[in-house]
Image (cartoon, rainbow, N blue to C red):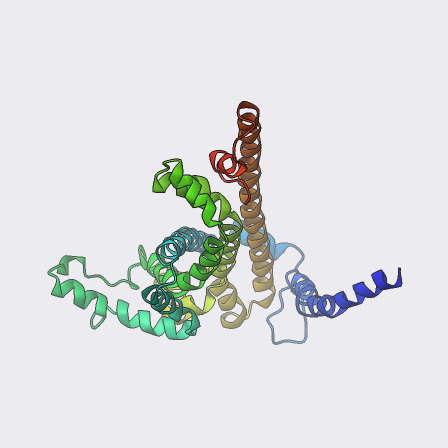
Length: 323
C-alpha cells in the first residue's frame, strides 16, 4: 500500500511544471481577457465580456485572420501528411541512397524558422528570385508573379514553405510506423494476388493509423503556431491576406497595446485548437473502431466457413487485423 502511494510522488515534478507553466499562465490570460489593460499602465480597467462581444460581432480583421488560419492549416495538414507518407513509402528500404535522401529531406527541419523565411523570401522575390528566373529561362515568363505580393496567393505560398520545412520531420514518424508492420502480411497479400493499391489499402494504411494520428495532430498544432515563419516573411501582409491568428494576437498586444483584447483572442485561439484536435482524434478513433468491427465480423465469418484457415490469412482478408 505504501509502495502504491509512493508511486504518485513521481507525478509531483511533472504536475508542478504543468501547473506553473500552463495552468497559471492560462488563468492569468483568462483574467486579462476581461479587461482593457494596455500592458503599460498600473490600472487594469475591467471590461466584462465586451472583448468577446467585439471579437465575434464587429472585428472583421479577426474574422479574416480565422479564415486565413483555416486555409493555411487545411492546406498544410493535407499536403504535408500526404508527402511525408509518400516519401516514407519510397524511402523505406535501408539503401545508401535512401538514407542519404532521408537526411536531405530532414535537413530543413533543423533550420531555424527565420532562416527558412529568408531562404524562401529570396526564392519568391519577384525581381531576383530563383523561381521567377527559372520560369523565364524555361520560356514561362507569363507565369512569373509577385508571389508574396499577391493577396490571393500569398497565404498558399507560405503554406508551401511550411510544408517544405517540416515534411522531413514527419517522414521519420511514418518510416517508424512502416517498419513496425510485419513483413509476413505483405507476403500473404502477394500470395493472395493483391495489387499494390489493395495491399496499401488493406494492410499498410490500417496499420499506420497510430502514426497518422500523431502526424495529423502534430501538423495541426504546428500549423496553428506558425507565427515566426509568417511574421518573418510577410508580417500579415499584403492587405492582411496572410494575417493568421498567431500574428493577429501579437499585433494586438505589442503593436496596438491591446493586451486585454489580445488575451481574449488567445483564449478563443486555444479553444479552437483544442476542439479541432479532439475532433481529429475522435474521427480517427471512429475510423479505427469501425475498421476493427468490420475486421472482427469478417474474421468470424471466415472462421465459421473455414475452421482450418491460417489466422494470418484471415487477418489480411479481414482488412488489417493486428499482427
